[in-house]
Image (tube, rainbow, N blue to C red; front, side, top):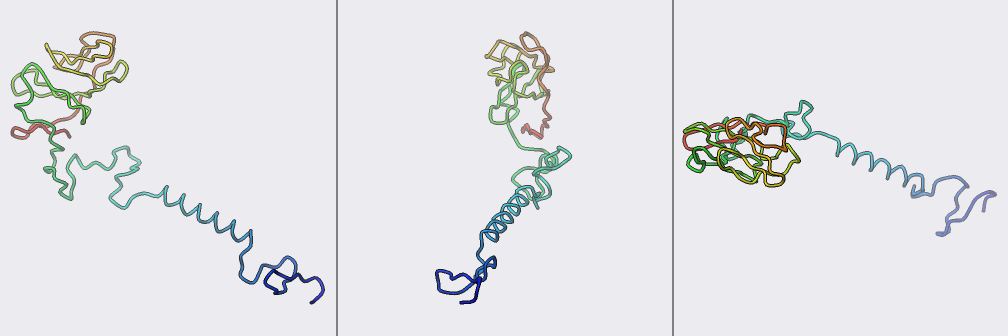
Length: 173
């Protein structure tokens, strides 16, 4: 055996400080693991290749005005249907929990939509009656005509949501 060499468990000789014949060292293992972690991080931080819908820097979320160009089951330019006009009573409205919106018809043929989150504490409004949108958490009431506060404790109006009416369909943009 040459001077200064070591014998590995498989009987082969190796000079001190040199990598084993197979190249499997702790240093190599750590570098490999580090590179794999960096690659995973780069993939997680990367954008999408679907037109920029996830992580758009302009805050639009890549929206195309409601309708998807791939024909995702929605009419061009109209958004998604949330109700039929016949579903919304004149002088009243209806809360759509899944869409987080309340749609009202203050006068015949006039439709308005507002966020269903009460501006007082964020509870979902629960009903529409007697010309007001009512939050059952703390008693706030909002006018169906413009979403303004009709009764506190809320002190901010409900944000208006954009809707369009196409025939007998009410579409959320």
